[in-house]
Image (tube, protein in one colour):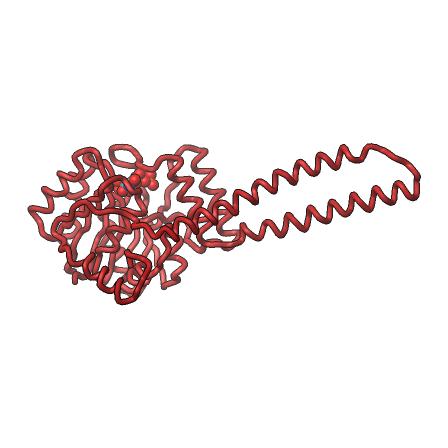
Amino acid sequence: MTDLCIVIPLYNEESNIPSLSRRLMKVMEDVSLRWEVIFVNDGSSDQTLKMLEDMACRNPSLKVISLTRNFGHQAALMAGLDHAEADAVITMDGDLQDPPELIPELIGRWQEGFQVVYARRTNFRKDHVLKRWLSMFYYYILRSFHMSTAPRNVGDFRLIDGKVLSELKNMRERTRYLRGMISWLGFQAAFVDYKRPDRKDGRAGYSFSQLVRLAMDGFFNFSRLPLRIGLFLGVISILIGLGFLVYMVADILVNDVYYHLYKLLVDVIFIFMGFLFILIWILGEYIGRIYHEVKGRDLYIIHKKVNLDESIRADIQITDVLNESPDPQL
Ligand code: UDP
Ligand code: MG
């Protein structure tokens, strides 16, 4: 078991790998811990895998896990974390937006006794205005409904202690939203501030729809509050409906008039039809998630490993049988 393991997911990063490895190696030269790096190739279609394999052949501390196809950033991270066995694990992006030079500082805070050390960005994002606003609004909602205690301005560049890692591996849910899960675990956290640079080369692998999906995972996986919106809207709609009924009956009895209040009523019914549809959608979200969890599918499929022994999966299968666990991953 090593002291420190660095997990780096990579998707079509051939143009960034040379400077990534150069900068990383330079930093690691001065780190006195025993370390290893697990690169996870997330189904790249460029030279990423070949370059990683070349590096791994020359240096046994560099390990490679290659997935059969593109499973997404979070699944790639999990693949790396599942294979990490160390006293501390650092996860970072491979596009040099997470500067390797910060690693000694992360280690320093960990050695002070913190179990989670986040790298926190201090500069503004240069994303599209719309993306920035949406993200601000999203985190505002998460925080104001106490759905997530995830700290502000942190991404997946962080160090976690071995204890946090084993708790993380024990969390059995399939839909992974690592940021939320780690803050949910609630270990002692520290921050290291840094200016996050722009992506060095290549293009962002996250599409807009993937971002929306990640955001929804953060929203629905950590709270059942959206389900309770039904109660709130239901009570309001009943009160309004009753109000109308009382009004009409009183008007007819007292004033002996008849007028077309039903027009308004039809309008109101239409509005609540909208709410009903939203509720059905929310139910669908949860049912979809139950379906996803119940399927118990592997989070990712490994095509190839370099410098990593095969026994890890075998061990998992043995404990699996002993515990009669329905989850082949844990
Ligand atoms: N990545 C991945 N699989 C994907 C998309 C991205 O492994 O499907 C990797 C990517 O190579 C990079 C990291 O995850 O190392 C962060 O991705 P990206 O830079 O696209 O995210 P952003 O910085 O825009 O949040
Ligand atoms: Mg990036």
